[in-house]
Image 1 (cartoon, rainbow, N blue to C red):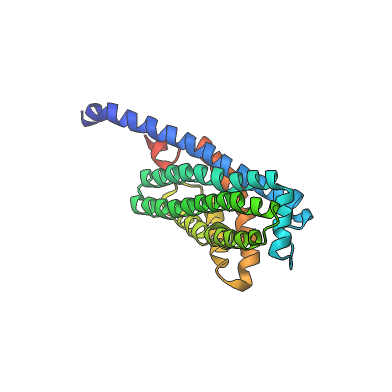
Image 2 (cartoon, helix red, strand yellow):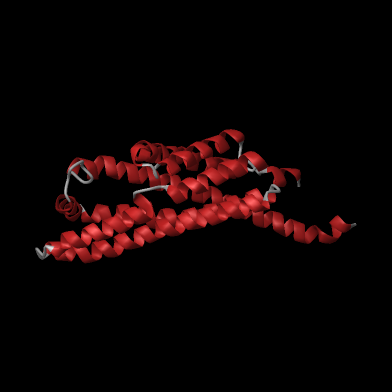
Length: 242
């Protein structure tokens, strides 16, 4: 009798969870696509032009940016702005999925870490958007202050989202632990999440930053697409029991 009484509310909640799961699946696929796009542009366009080359100074880097400004603007928008918006949706979907599997505290923890990371990623994109709009006109005018401005913007961007992966690593690690504890994510995906999270946290150590960053970035490509597939195809423990 009690279940019949609350049936409409339960049904509405199940529909809401299903819709959020689908949104999360789409968001995960978008996040994965932004990473693929980011690596493709970096390796196919920017690195061959000298951007980020070892030993290159800020003036040389800004020259590459100026010569490829359209692509660079798009690159920063995709890897930061688009990624952050999709990431925020994914964070909410996974937090709700974990909470629905009976791990409310872990769900809230993952939401906190994920929200922090999405905010930092969005902030990095906003910094570079404004930085480019200020530095490039000065560069075109031959003003030497353009290089200094670029250095400042690049430093802030790296501090927020490019030079270390602490926030993303903490989120991935928390998700891995929550997935193992709740069954909200499959065990292999949860283990991958722990590995990616550990690699992100390893960027805190100078000697391991390069390898950790590579494992984190490439591992998250697989993780995003895998998570998108799980959210789309696997109802989750709570939904499966309903």
